[in-house]
Amino acid sequence: MHEEEGACHGLRVHYQLIDLDRSGRGVEALPTLLDAARVMGFSGLNITFPCKQAVIPLLDDLSADARAMGAVNTVVNDGGRLVGHNTDGSGWRWGFTRALPQADLSCVVLLGAGGAGSAIAHALLGMGCERLVLVDHEAARARALATELGRLHGTTRVVSADHPASVIAAATGLVHATPTGMDKLPGLPLPAELLHPRLWVAEIVYFPLETALLKAARAIGCATVDGGTMAVGQAVDAFGLFTGRTADPQRMQAHFRLLLQTRVD
Image 1 (cartoon, rainbow, N blue to C red):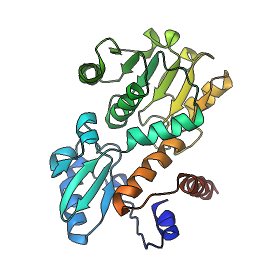
Image 2 (tube, rainbow, N blue to C red):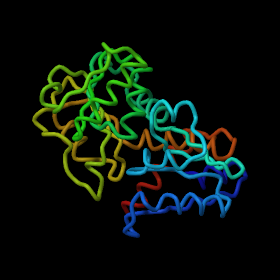
Image 3 (cartoon, rainbow, N blue to C red):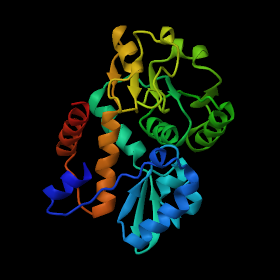
Image 4 (cartoon, helix red, strand yellow):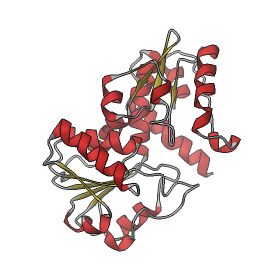
C-alpha cells in the first residue's frame, strides 16, 4: 500500500517486510532492528503483534496518543530520534464508521487488551461508547486497562470481565482484537453459540479477511466489519507520518483489496 501510494505522489517508496516468525526471533530482536533502521536511514517502521508494547522503552519519545494508549504501531525516524505513534485507534475508527455508521455503541465487548485493543478502546470511548467491557485471556491485563481507561474517560463507562459468556448477551457490539483467527492462529476467539443477531461484530484480523468469527457472525445475521478497514485506515495515517503527504484513502483501500486478491490467487 505504501509503495503504491508513494508512486501516486511521485515518491520512490521501499517498504520492507521484517517477519520475526520466519527468523525464529521474538521481541528480543527489537533493539537490533531499531538500530538498523537508524543506520540504514529508514523513514520509519510499522510495528505489529507482539511488539507494540515491547518497543516503547526502546524509543526516544512518544506522541500523546501513543503515550495514552500504551502502545505503538508506527515509529518515525526524526533525524535519528525514533518517535512512537499510534494510528491503530484512528485507523480502526475510520474503517468502522465507514462500514457501520449507525452502529449501536451503548454496550460494547472488546476481546483483547493488548496494543491493538488499547487503541480501539480509546477510539470507542472517544466515539461515545456508553459502556465498554474488556475481556482478555490475561484477566489482570484487562483489569489494568479498564482502570486506566476509567481514569481518563470515567469509571462508570469501563469495566472488565473474566469471560465473554457473562457479558455478550447484553452487548450491542463485539470487537475482536486478538491474533486468533489469523492464518497462523486459526480458530474462534470465543464459542460461536455466544453470538446473537442483535450484535454487530468487528474484526481486526485481515489475513484471512473472512475469519471464522466473521463467518459465524454472518451466518446468524450479525452486521460485520472485516479487519481490512482498520488495516487501510492505520496505513493512511502512517503514510502521512512517514512522508508528510496526505494519502488518498479510497486509492489505498482499492490497492489493499487488490493485494489480498493477488495473495489468494
